[in-house]
Length: 179
Image (cartoon, rainbow, N blue to C red; front, side):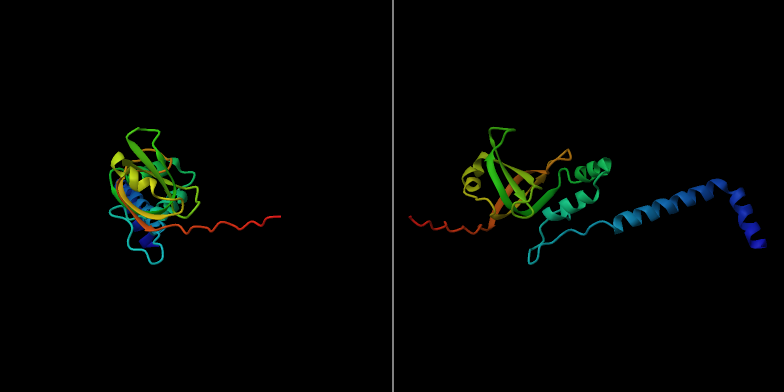
């Protein structure tokens, strides 16, 4: 009983320090829980490390982003934390087309899996036109570039390099029979 009275007297006497200590413990515990629950970057089976400086590959980026669903400020902070950082991501080609943003740019849309609606938009200069338009839907590519998104839409990358890792398998035409 005497011990409890001593603790109570200390807390009352040093109220400011006690409050600071409690706040510090809560913040530390919250940070520990937040970061220990964070998804580890997804690494496709048999793939080499796929990120130059972000710690996330393309599927891992979307997994982490989706874990913050409904928390717009946190999603915005997550996206902004990538701004200006180098990425090396692998993905499947969804499409290649001239950019709506700039006539001198070509946009490559890549997804974590073939046909996935989640996509990153990679912008390349005119000097890459021939290589980009040679790509086909579902080709597996690796891009490198600088993350340039500012909002919560698809991530934008200013592309530097692209490498075709595996061409999509062509589906043989179906035979038709004459009647």
